[in-house]
Length: 535
Image 1: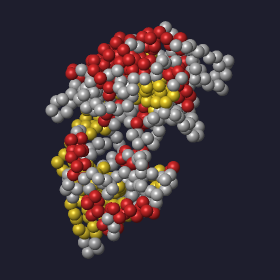
Image 2: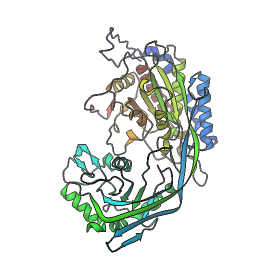
Image 3: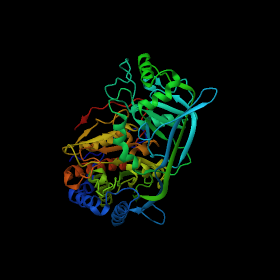
Image 4: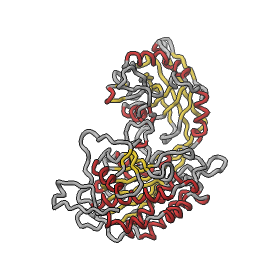
């Protein structure tokens, strides 16, 4: 491995270099071993941890194991009472017996009420809801529910969604203009989470998502596909903000709701797409009444945090965060364990090995390191959301987050790198320099885009740091046939790959911790990257 030392000649406030003396990190890097990684993973993905579901005893066992490793390494505890645990409350909710959706149409001489049938006309998800809800409000048709400035497209133009129920079409428009929604691959705007955020921003009281008339999937098949997931408890952090329920409708039910427009849902869709602009409108004299009954309880979960202080008197108070979620999805209704060896036992094992590398390295880092194992990722990035809302170290002094999630499968000589240049090109360059010091490891940027249809940039815990403007890198080896299945087991993990990726992350963190300047924020257009870079 080459060693490169760079002198900034006293001009650190002007010049930035991604290069650093890797010899100063050699002892720590070489301490990262596949044997130790496998030992950690065999415990985390064992029968005793029962799939590490948030809120279940198996996750608590895993947390105690991680804390014991932090204690063995002598990391500083940051939790209350000198604990390694950052405990937080979650609301666990599941659907009750009373779920209603009905349409009220005022004909002047009186109103007519039509009730819809759960499972035949609609279904609702408990995810994100914190309590029972009863809403009656005017109904708006809002096209696909998309606001996309770069495409000069906005379904909320000309309507006021405040305190209204919004009906939207699933998916995204297929327009003749090839520069907008080509229809070949969905953009991020087709994602329901994006649509929910947009509707909430516009003040919607609830969202009705109608099945796309162009879809070949029957509503009955869609309900069967979702039925098991809908029975699961939803989890959320307590909040004072109003929550917005999301109902999924059949095309037939949507037709009855939009009937006052004089058109069917399919006709509204054809009109929208042929004109190339939204035809959103209020549905006159029409109201929707909905009721969601939730059974809920409050539970306690925990993040596990250990800190290694920086040695520099001027920048030692700044911190490089290394994060990984240690939760998985637990057991199914028959008691079968979902082991989560790759997701995210590999990332959690890497986190502990990187912590040991920092502690055992012959040279101390100038900036500090926070090692953060978070829970609740599988339930909506909840643990990392709690951390950034209630940080144990100031976010203003957190210079980067290196997040590890699933690094043990697929191509043995490459790793997907996501988000490294989104906020700071400096961080991206340090990561590339670190990779140039590794043998046989490619950086793959295939998913490094905010509009990638799989939305990986938004799907792990780095995203909560990114929302606060903290530069991030997300290390990810990709999904596979065992993803979220009981067959995600230790025997399928490539520990040589986990070792290489862990060493890369350690080197990148070391480069950030010892650079004269903290990673600077980008200004202007993001640089375009090739799929793979190898030095």
